[in-house]
Image (tube, rainbow, N blue to C red; front, side, top):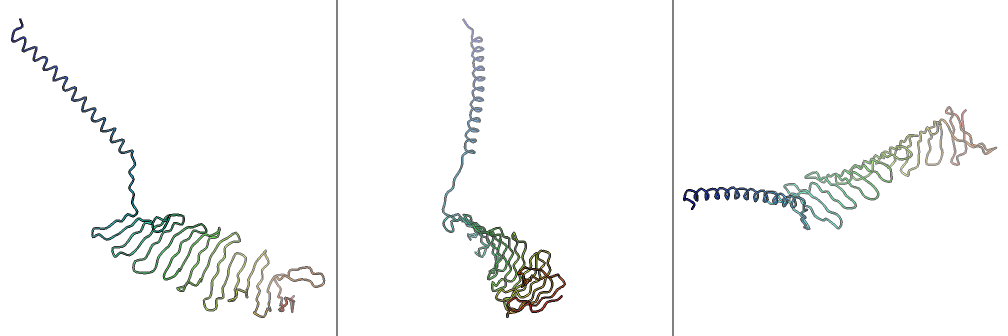
Length: 251
């Protein structure tokens, strides 16, 4: 028969084995929980969260609206920002014709940047438009206006080269300067003074409302006897009547 001492020793051994098994089981359970949590966390991180609403409003600490994201009109989502006084300072609109508007606080002055199917442009406004920079049908242009929105200066570039136009508000006469010459027009748009270097033929042409004109430099003439066109030299003066017939020429 087993002695009491032998029985107690055997019992202690079994308890030690059970405790070791229990420790290993606890470690396995903890490891399983860690792996499961990681898998669940990864699944949550990869999922997409969608928040839907018709309008979002951001308010400051006093409850005043400071930003708003909304559908201003159909197909035009708009993000707007407001000052602490409730004035609209910035507006950014999307859609097929996106634009950005910056307002100067306390005034009607603003800057507009927009694009549509026909042009891309930047406009600076007071009460009316004062300056515009645009690209339309391949032509880049800079236009300046007075306070009544009447055009004063226009600079544009095209396949024909650069062109600068300045308009006199007093009588609507305007001056045009391009790569080939210089033109002064009356209010009807009729050239009255033309300085040209076209095709290497310099000339100064002056004309009045009655149709009389004078050319200093190269002039195109038609020889009555033959009908052939000839060009005078740069050292010549030709006077024409209303019918473009030569009144006098030198040499």
